[in-house]
Image 1: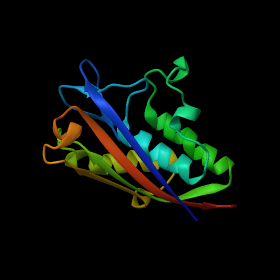
Image 2: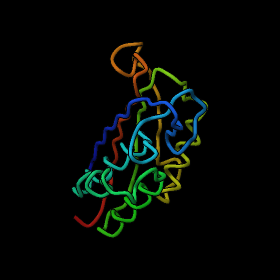
Image 3: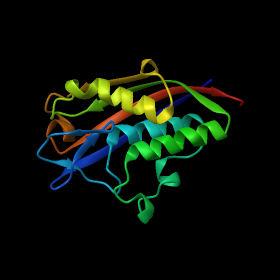
Image 4: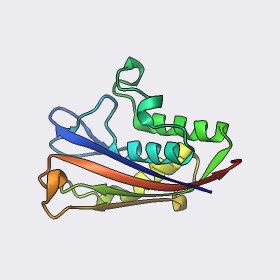
Length: 158
């Protein structure tokens, strides 16, 4: 068994959709990034890649590659799942936390779990998504951006 940890952060930006966990969330700002800037899915990708010692999201989907401009991060996650399977690994579980002062994410949690599970061919029971604020502290508390952490357990041939 192997454990992986992933972390990602994106700043808020005008004229962008807010996509978190594959959900388009109504909000007055979105997250800035080369892809759709899905902070949660990016953290999940990094935790899985890290657990398998296969690098990170930037190695596999660099932000200077036009193929990944505005790409749906669920596509990236699906590719990470295939990469793990090709290397003899399977995902046992994923536990995540999104840190955002606003907007409130509780209404979207179950859909996020389902989207992550679907991209990896998992059961939603293998995916946990939690959300919290930072009580107006730090950059997320000042509503400058959103961050996410992900931990996972995988097993496989090694």
